[in-house]
Each structure stands twice: as structure tokens, then as C-alpha cells.
Length: 102
Image (cartoon, rainbow, N blue to C red):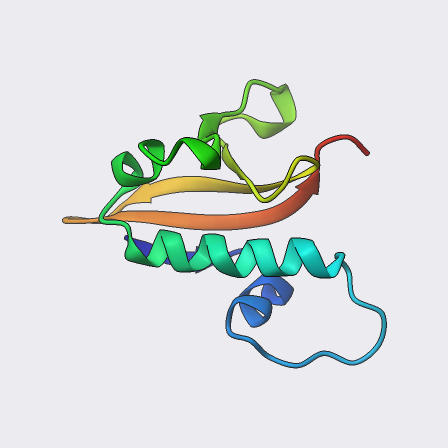
């Protein structure tokens, strides 16, 4: 599985780049995000991710999230993404970290 990013900040966060100033997300969310990125990189495809029940992999139903999916980072935050396909592999296109209850 390949990962692409629509958000430069999330790409840099996944690559462990250092930031100055106030962080956009709580530390526990950043740690969970990096853990999820590691899990996604180790997956062959979305089927592998669907089998990990703690991810709560789901297709989103809200109109503003049409054709988007999510996995949980913690009880409040989720990672929103699209799934694309190349000739031989699936591509996760990461869009945002969303506070589900904000």
C-alpha cells in the first residue's frame, strides 16, 4: 500500500520533521497518527487494515465526506482519507486529522 498526502503538514508529521510554535494536535494524537502511518505502510491493502478491529476502518456517511474513509486515532480524533488504485496496488490519500466531536 502506498501513501500520498493532500496536507503538507501531515506529510511532514509522518516524516518526523520538527516544528516550531504551537502544535496543531495534542501529543497523544500525534503519537497515534505516527503509529497508524506505520500500520498503513505495513499493510498490503485496505483489507489488511479492515481486519484490525481497533482501527474502526469505515466508509464515512456524511455528505461532506463523500467517497472518504476513516480510521480512529483515539476516541475523539480520526484520520480521514480516500482510497485510490494504481495498476497493482491501493493508494491511501491522506486528507486530514479530524476531531470527530468538535
